Picture (cartoon, rainbow, N blue to C red):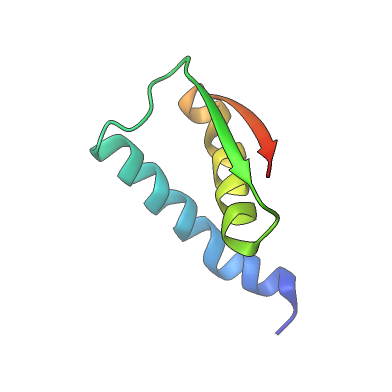
Length: 67
């Protein structure tokens, strides 16, 4: 399966689930700055992508720290 199809199939639902969890547990507030520590592995890259995707909607500033 081409990567684009995988992304289009799974990412929208994942973005909504992360947004729901952030809101449910009051993890982040509008106006906050989030420092995302990224190693370059798949998990941290996906986390960064999710934060960037949600940053405007949630009113977040995202800073990347490469480890």
